[in-house]
Length: 159
Image (cartoon, rainbow, N blue to C red; front, side):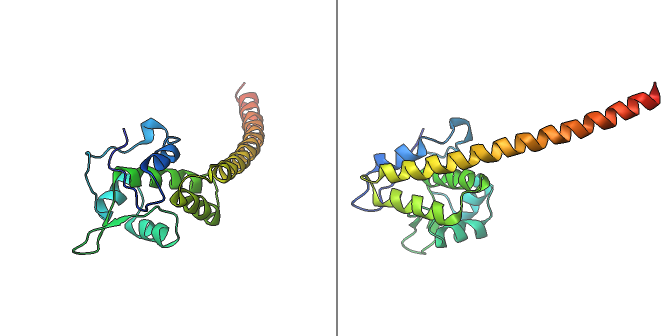
């Protein structure tokens, strides 16, 4: 369940963000209480990232508009922010360059009307991930071959 999403600009509707967040696997979602705002330390703990990384991601333009507490200026994260951070983390862990994530985040911030470009970015990255998986599979086959050689040699010595 997605709660606590904020529309940070007049040109973006909450539903637009939800569409991008819907690609997150439900089992990976970090639930927060409805309307709950999290500190950067709580967000770091829940996301598995350091506070430093979260600040870097914000400065680099990878995050959507993170709310600030009016009185102190401290960052306040919502569940929607956590979901976006999860997506960014998955894109990074699969090798998407920061400049591409920045571009994708920029398109989401701009709101409706650029879905074709968003799709193009994600489909291109998906193709790259599939290529990496194929390469890893070939590497694994080679490793399995070497393991079989050693097992065969050890079995021959023992038998």
